Amino acid sequence: MNEVKAPPDMSKPVHLLAFGFGSGLLPKAPGTYGTLVGVPLYLLLQPLSLTLYILIVLVAFLAGLWICQRTSEDLGVHDHSGIVWDEIVGYLVGMTFAPSGWLWIVIGFLLFRLFDILKPWPIIWIDHRVQGGLGIMLDDLLAGLYTAGAVFLLNLTGWFS
Image (cartoon, rainbow, N blue to C red; front, top):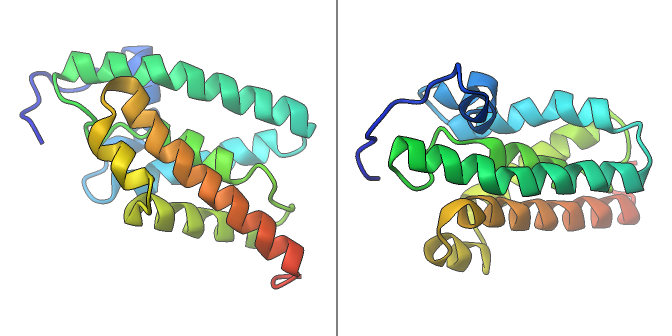
């Protein structure tokens, strides 16, 4: 990782969002803590219709392109480990088709972290080649899509019914 030219300024709304309301500032496993921030957001969005849920998550993704790009520029480093807006949105993507209940929240959380950490193809390819806000957001979008597919299939098979 390149040297950070400036620390995050949590008084700036863009940094506050990028760093997951401060969760990305925790010293160990900021991506995991950022994903945890996604859980209460998911609980707020879960009762919405599927269409409205997807629309809000799409807006969060599109906003994340700018949020992550701007914060990276401010800090002077691409994809600072404390930038966790991408994990928050990725988790929300992963929960798109999840049934209600804490079991599914945990399953979605664990699957998303697994896909985000292991970066199966093409996530790893994108992570190494796509720069800027799009690069930061896109690998977690794909991890979220992998998670959504896995959650959908697990629910379909009835393994956790």
